[in-house]
Image (cartoon, rainbow, N blue to C red; front, side, top):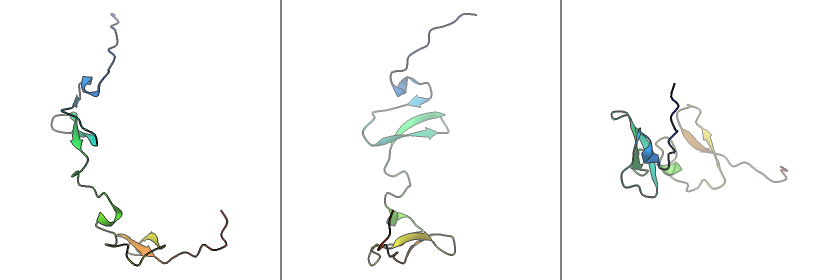
Amino acid sequence: MAIGRKKTVQNLNDLIDVSIASPVNGQVLVYNEVDKVWENKDLNGTGGASTFLELSDTPSSYSGYGENIVSVKTTEDGLEFSYKIETKNWEF
């Protein structure tokens, strides 16, 4: 049995299942199921929210909710702001 030398990978693009074209800061690797390779894509526009208020199951504003906490709705289908918790005289 012949023993070959291990190839040292110096760049992600050296891997056989990675295809990187003109990488820029802020990009992520996304798996392309059709081509069976990892590709670099912009993080923006990947379908996720970038702030709490952009989520579809959360309040649309922070206004009037200072010092409140976030909790799961009793209907268990989203989040809401709950009453303030009094923290005077608490020790941690």
